[in-house]
Image (tube, rainbow, N blue to C red):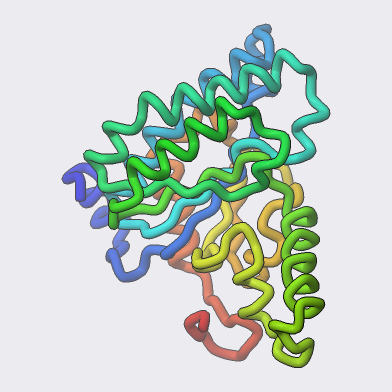
Length: 254
């Protein structure tokens, strides 16, 4: 791990064993950050995009196993076309320019979301970067692009229904594991910690099934101002939580 990050963990009294395995972040506040400065919303998105590689590197250096970033929701298609175009181009630019850093930091890219509606350019860039990083064994960076949890659950139910209709699955064999494995996040452990920036107290249709027992941490800091120290503060708060998973004493998730 990077020496500065390791020292920061020691200063906070946190051991690597106490770290959450999976952190999911709702990257909120780009537009409001720009508006406060009298700038267009797209400028806030451009500044927010610069934070992603820094936080990804910090998460990798900490030894986190999974980092999911909510980068574009299905509902975001309702925004002005200029803003949508900017967000998609920022995604493409990030995937291309950050490939060397992903390889250097042993980061594996995963797409979490629907492919429907994404341009061929975005899909090709995503697929190429996923192939490029597929053998990496460190942090799994899960970009939730074109993602909506209700749509994800509906798609998962349809997959299960198709198997039942085909006679390859009995209804009585449908359990939580089967549902989980039918979602976009199949094979990814549920988040331990969900961080939301910009102070909004809502989930915004993000990982509704997966965060049933996740710890929530909300900070007033806008995403363009989010730093390694803010990430460490969220982790410190998480470490102090008493996770019960519905029981009377802390238990590890199955």
